[in-house]
Amino acid sequence: MDAGSLGRVRVPALCSPWSTDVSHRRSLPAVVLVLGLAACSTSRPVLYPNAHLQSVGQAVADRDIKECGDRAEAAGADRREGGVGEVAAGTGVGAGVGAAGGAVGGAISGGAGIGAAIGAASGAVIGFLSSLLGSRSGPSAAYTSFVDRCLREKGYEPIGWQKADVGR
Figure (cartoon, rainbow, N blue to C red):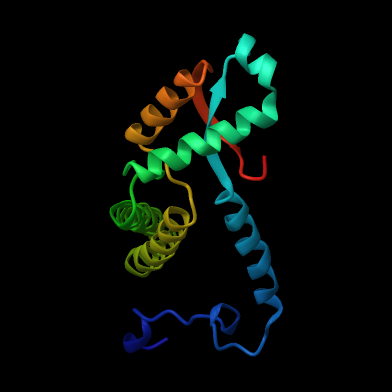
């Protein structure tokens, strides 16, 4: 190995997006599916089973929850917290965590600089995708307060919010 190649790392063709070997790309649909399913969960109010809920039933309660949510959005309450700033923050945090982890791994193997660069790039991508695809903290306080009040006015007793499947 000559002095000019000490700082260079050869990236295997397997990791290259231009590689002719497509076997490593078979996992991409699975990754996209998992990230997509993570984005399909949303927070919903939990209703205390009082006399009103028992008399109208869960199907009517679900329609009322949707109606109250629609009214909250029409009044200007954002369903989701965050947005562009949260995606940027997720990307930055991912890059920082990835760089730190990559530097440690690189230091162990003798290439802290390249390890940090690879870790930062990987972490940024993971942070960006997780922020973009729905790993947000949940509805804004204004949205949940509006929906809770609307449901109380209809006779329900909301006791909190929790993650639930969208198809519910």
